[in-house]
Image (cartoon, rainbow, N blue to C red; front, side):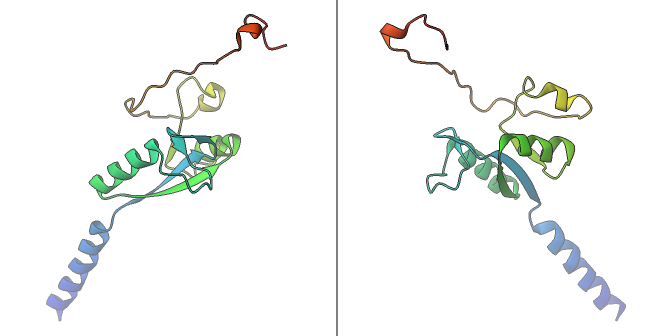
Length: 128
């Protein structure tokens, strides 16, 4: 009987460790396709999601994505602490909210450069 208890306990322990850990990933509900798109659009196989899912598959993790407006996303991660990860983020963004929170960043996966195209007749006009 004791041996049966040990076998059942071992099956339970092995089962718990074999199932992948689930992480909650908070993402912006904005479309910045092809880099990321976590809106309810059908076109959500963005670069970031593919990279995250490949990482999770390789490590045996399960990722659950929560698409939120930016302000609520930051509050959920930094204040309420209901999320395990936040994407996208940068050390320069919302520094006041991060004063008393330890945030660890991954290595850079992709670098982007933003720019604006202006018609020649509007060159130098400013935003007024």
